[in-house]
Amino acid sequence: MSAPALRERRDPREAVATFAADVRYYLTQQPRQLPSRYLYDALGSALFDAICELPWYPITRAEMRLIRGHARDLLGGAELPDRLVELGAGNGTKLATLVSLGLPDGRPLSIELVDVSPAALRTAASAVSAVARVQVLTREATYEDGLELMETRRGKERVLVLFLGSNIGNFDPVGAEQFLRRIRRALGPGDALLLGTDLVKPEAELLLAYDDPLQVTAAFNRNLLVRINRELDANFELERFRHLAVWNPDASRAEMHLVSTGRQRVHIGRAALNLTLLEGERIWTESSYKYRPEEVRRLLWHCGFRECRQWIDEPGRFVLTRAAV
Ligand code: TRP
Image (cartoon, rainbow, N blue to C red; front, side):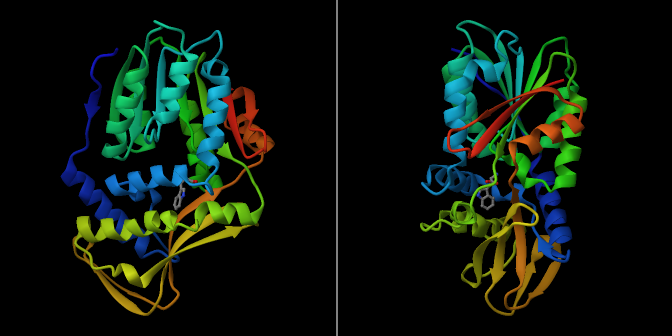
């Protein structure tokens, strides 16, 4: 088995200051918003793992089936990577499966797990270290910082960047294009990107995926307020916010909001912010854009990737695209 994982952590004081500044900025926008990356504290990551097990959230299972069925080709067939970088690794199950099924015995590989959640990184590092003789480095960082850190160590090796779970869907179209271009700039000849994208499906199915009958997704969304209360010394009253998911067909996206059930004042101490929320006023916490397979290919081509290969699951729910440089 492999050597113990190396860890890179963030300075906690700096992390809180950034969180406070983001909360202050986004909550005073019109419409009010909160960046979705803050959903993933320890409890948020655990709730997200539970979401992935829900019968109404097919994304993770569909992607896992594709990974199980095509591991070797997804890794690159005859052109295996020397270095694998996953942006937003979560609990590491997908990567562990990909490596254990797709990597030939004894083939060395170094892995970098990038995630904003230290709890997720700990789980992911042990999941991945358990399956193969791989060297694992965890980076507690945003996608952008993870890419920058990856670039500073570029050698001659072949790199595969993984961006799974339809996390690309959490960017708006302009942001998605910019971010894919950013990944492209970090890559060189012989490198590739493996991108997981959720596909457009009937509205009823999409709404159940983001507003499940067990209300795990509602808990996941509302936990963001619990986190702000704890880390930023705020006084959000949980019972006065409800979870709302809507499908916006014109923009091809599911939207997640927290809705204020009455007029109320909120104080966020560390962000030096006092808010008055009206009855029915929304805080927009996440969007999840849904694509068509050909849109993904066009977008990747437009961002400078070549040789796209796609794998789509049987009911046509999810697509994995491997794009070379
Ligand atoms: N990347 C996931 C997705 O878009 C994140 C997610 C799932 C999510 N359910 C959510 C984000 C509910 C906010 C609220 O599917």
